[in-house]
Image (cartoon, rainbow, N blue to C red; front, top):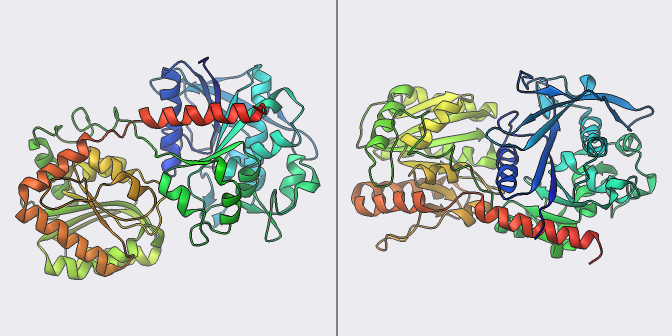
Length: 490
């Protein structure tokens, strides 16, 4: 089959700007596709937090974007995704992007997000025409790029780029980009698109809904999540849209960069190790205990947590069961995260009450996050909802069996431990309650202390799983070709 021209448009791209797992995908998948001979390019905003250094070069031609009452002019900086030939174009616009944050500042969501990301959508398409490079398919990511399919179906339908197919990936349906009708005016989209089967939702414009109705095909980041979002309890008000588009919706599990996440070669952890020799993991465990000021003990079961402190992540369940777990079991916890103030306070209080058992870091520290993955014996991820999740994949890659609630991508990526068989990669529980989580932690403890051979098998099972982008990239290529054929009416 001939190579494809694929444009990724995203608000985040690792390692340049990252808020969540979306950035990891956009920083990894294009490189895999390019290695297979496809012409892949990426566009994102040039936020104030992105360091424009000597690896970036400016395009001489200014970028005139046809939005608003008069064209908005920007500048394009070009570099490459690390260790690849994939071009990354960062769109500079002082009014919209010359601030460090992606979505929200200290006082909440930026009130001009609708205009900012409309500029990104129209700007990315304008850049393609300026480059004389028309993609076969535009891969859009979350609500911030929802106007791209809308523009290609309306305002730009008869332009050179209008023949491009679109694939819209839902990373988290909870965030939808509600805004005023001014966004349609700003984008120069016909006023008639403000209707229930296009952009309108509860009297507002919904940028995610626009993308879902107008994209050629839709993907989301796990098969189970693709089913959950078609139900009223998981669709965040758009379940009816996704049922309508069900024939065009595919769930594809995210992969990870297995070169970066490799305990055998990772130079950011104190000692490397493999599934055949866990000696280095023991060294990492001692380093983690020392780093967080908890008792250095190679024999105690150490549970790691790297998460946003939020009820969606189930961190309230953990906070509520921690006292009974720490008092009733021979365990330690290494916790890194930040978020909800009340939850931060609960974890701070627990750390003060159990200083030898609970090590806490409030904030984010990439090196410490890696050390928690490598040095822990188990990884706790009790999410109420989880479209895909990446940290459980990192944990298994590092020989750290995860404890997860059975939801979304956690169902698809973690195999339930079956006592006596040596099968499984982690522990799953159903009910989103503190008791269910505590009981599962207890189950993990008994396995660790009483079934050491099976526990070692669990570690090795997880490390043997293929979490690379290989299989998922094949699925995306199938979707791209499916979308291109549909766009041509085939």
